[in-house]
Image (cartoon, rainbow, N blue to C red):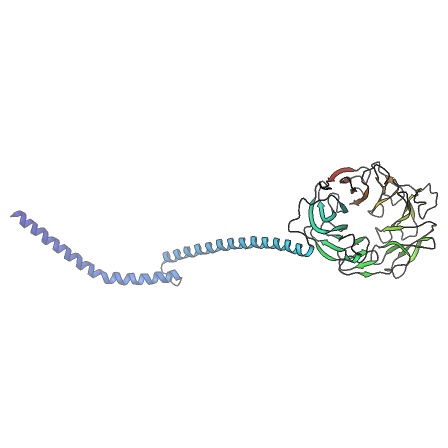
Length: 449
């Protein structure tokens, strides 16, 4: 009985507690509901940045915004990086494309291209220079030890002229091309890209005084070889005239057995004889170079016979007022040297039996090779470094029965290339003005030759 009473008592107390809890919950609900709703609205406003009451919400949103900014920054940085890289790649592709369309070079020059036949050479400085051959141009920057092919085409690089390590021009043509079909290619970036800038106006030695000022014989360009005008020259010219600049030029004429060197100081409007010699034998050529407005080096080429050619070499530094005979080479096959007495014991001789390549460095220094087709070692070198007062010849003699090539960077540093049908072309260098020559590179022939 007692147990039943206790059970009912426990049940009664439980009912009371349950009822009290229900009343309490109902009484707090309107406040709680209203507060929750307002807090929710403020939180939304804070997240939009229009309410400053809840610092926590504002900081959280600010953190979230900062995260977004960092994300955007990272994304932008990544995008910009990608864009830059893409742009760089695109530029590189455009460069190759432009080069291909403007110069005809391939996308990537063939590193195995045959360099066996060298037809032109030009030095930039003591270590660097260009050579050209049948369908290619190459450059070395370690004094000829190694070469990089920079251009490939279908024609032959007949001559190269360089103003500096960035700017150079190459004349490209086939053997059967007329002078005006010969293309002039130019580089402004050391040979990375080549483009055709014009055509040769005539055969001759292409040389530039500046980026735009160019000459070939009596043709003058003021726009880098795009267009040419002809300057007046005297009649009866032997060889090609040479203009040092737009005003000062030189020419050799032959009339009535009289050799004359003519000079102009007004761009060809008038010509005056500054050298005149009677010569009863044939004059078959003349080569003129000039290292200054008043300077001229003149090679006169006489007769030829029995693989021998007679020649002489003169120099003036005062506009032709006085001339110094630098070399006189008379031969049994070619006859007397032109422009000097038949007997000339006081004028220096040059080695070889015919003239080799001529290279004028400045008003004091000039190199003139000698060749001897009948000799085992046909190529020799001579030079002056005092304006022609004295003549020196190297003890060295090298093989190669085709036309040799010569380029000098200055008084001391030079490249001498010997060529041959049977044997490989060889590059020799000098560091002491031609006294000694060192073999530095052999251009191997291909197996099918």
